[in-house]
Length: 355
Image (tube, rainbow, N blue to C red; front, side):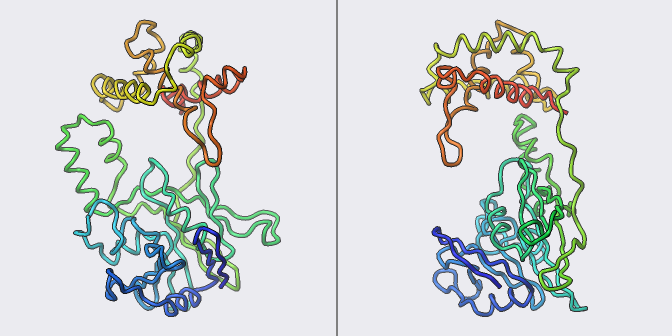
């Protein structure tokens, strides 16, 4: 087993086999404190990061818990408030990594992504990145996630990539909660319908299982979903709006110097007004994309300014280590290629010109 530290109290383990995980569990003192000995909190790294730990399911099964995720019996997400005690099966099902020693002596590790197509599951990604067994690696390709076996780093020309889909499975109490919320909302909330629509309490089969066949040798054993095709622009549909898009873009570029886009309050209030308008007039998911299409076609549309402000926010804030330039700064520097590129991407996504 290899262990090394970073400056941020993050520890990389890369356990090589089941025995390494078992030994790490047995050699880690339990944190007593307010959690109590009965909760068996054994951090996998820095003891201040108690939620990142090795959880013993039974003598032949250990889970690497990222903390505050579905199935965690101690550090639960917002939904239970500590009142819903996950079952053992739920803990095993939703842990990022589950090591198992089988009756025939073989060893497997199950790798799971986070549940939900919306947003990022950063704690899961971080756990996989730091605690996958050697030589498995977590790979992010433009938002699509894979587990790679081998590669150039291990003297191989090419590694084998296996698609690790975001999960649609959630615990049954979560599905029940959103079903009830959906009924109370009386089908008025677009967010609730999108949130609830993808959920299932059944196992979606997205988790990947790898089997150890030798020293630092692993093969894909079972599980996984097919990689969905990359989205493409529906050119036939988009061409119908090409003239309207160009007119809207030219109008927006003219309006930009006149709008107080540097004011956070203005941006927030404008986008809030747009959200209310969409919920009032386009609450049906099948009509969700029509709001921008209607704005593009109608020069007098009441949400025309709000739509442009919504687009300009793709320039705001910061990205990783650097602060992104605003649209006005791009225009002042004459970087109109970047502006147009972002505009095309925003229109394709928001007007649902992708297929």
